[in-house]
Image (cartoon, rainbow over the protein chains, first blue to last red):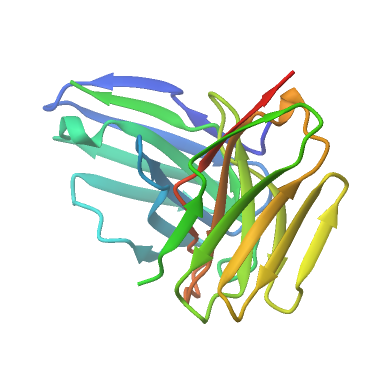
Length: 114
Length: 113
């Protein structure tokens, strides 16, 4: 069992739906991340949060909206997605932002957009 | 921006043999080089990492080597076991100061009993 928990594990949504992915880390870390993993593509960073402040947005479309209410929780709000957004969305955390901090991943949320 | 190339994309070995996965990177400012293992239906898990001031690191059957001059690093698994079968990803931090990792494309390792 990892220290990073993601819900739901699987989600199917229509292109007009609004849904949210939730992540909680139990490691006492200060940094949290969203990564996207698509078939045949490397893992791509989406967002980085440090102590609830967004410190990086990796050119992610506005139909993905992150929220970090505290250092233990991270959400990814989804609206008007496209079928090509179907992927595994991975939440992760590390002690701090910055090079060399080990990043711990959750199990991921499988998203299918129909 | 930083680019990480990983080879091979698939690797099949007999149980007990060694497996080697290689990665090259483009950003000379890279200082941190982790390797992750991802089993089916799970998130990636860190198995070993190395920093730029070290040329080699070993942890039981797993070792990583780094050549900063040539900008490449490799994962070596000895005495492979069926439970080593998974997808392996290399990564590096590039010039990032936010902990951002740039990942290779992944290597699917199959260890045949």
